[in-house]
Amino acid sequence: MDRVRRAATGPGRVTASRDDRMAGDSAHAGPRSRIVSSMTTRSAWGLGLATVTDDGNTLDVWYPKPILGDEPADGDAALLATLSAMERKDAARGVHTTVVRTWADLDDAPQTVAGAYLRLHVLSHRLARPNTINLDGIFSRLPNVVWTSAGPCAAEDFEAAHTRLRAALGRPVQVHSVDKFPRMTDYVLPPGVRIGNAAHVRLGAYLSEGTTIMHSGFVNYNAGTLGRSMVEGRISQGVVIGDGSDVGGGASTMGMLSGGGRQRVALGERCLLGANSGLGIPLGDDCVVEAGLYLTAGTKLAMLPSGGVVPGSHGLFKEPRVVSARELAGASNVLFRRNSQSGAVEALSRGGKGIELNSALHANQ
Image (cartoon, rainbow, N blue to C red; front, side):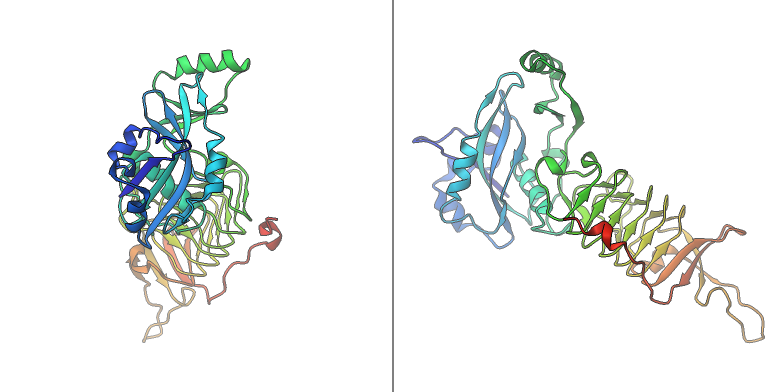
């Protein structure tokens, strides 16, 4: 459940928007005490600045200081005053900004745009790890937005707004993307990270301190790193990367959105996904996937527990056991490689030694 209401910045209450009415907004349900008494430890609250179109549709909400749990006793009066001073109308974009109070039960699916944005901020502020809060149906709650250098605009009839903006600003307007999710760095900048291309990290990404996202790296919402990591490849929705691991250039992790598998992919600590490799199963610690090898759940693996030398009882070499990669889900200390002569995919024990990242690359001060 989401509860969203416009913050009262003057003597009277501000009329709730369409999204607020859909959420059963407390502005219609009773005084603030009713909100506070209904909160749980699996909840989040935030004061935000919403961008609302002239016909009442919320495009985005920025929450500078979201928190877990109850609304502060003073409603964060200092932040309220700061955000209230930012309220204004932008005739060129056909929007106005307004302060909203939002409370969300993190075990429930988002019901409003404001509730969806609060959950995404909770993730990017490192208040909750990926896959620990309910994001079901978030695509249906978020509008498609034209993200421009002048701010978010409604996708509908954007060309008219584009013309008004150029006339008002006297210069071209850059369109960064047309998408449901904005860049994380336009809303949240987690301390201790380095991001080569901000357009490749969506709001809702979880980046731990010491993480480096190179220019070709990508991190989706509800995904990210749990420690110091090097990311030159793609971290798909729902995927988490452990401390000290490296996602090589062009490497990919399989998500669970359209066309994805049913098993959630994760990479443990001190692992390496080689350049242009891919991962479709969860792995434990100290694993390596060879460059260019895409390991899906159905990939047939030849098990070589002793480097491929497995003598039989009659002095002959035994044929390696062949299994599907899904049978090694969660395994640690494994090297996955493709035999350069036979083309067979092989799994070998690595003896427990993990990779080591260059510490100088992750001292992001």
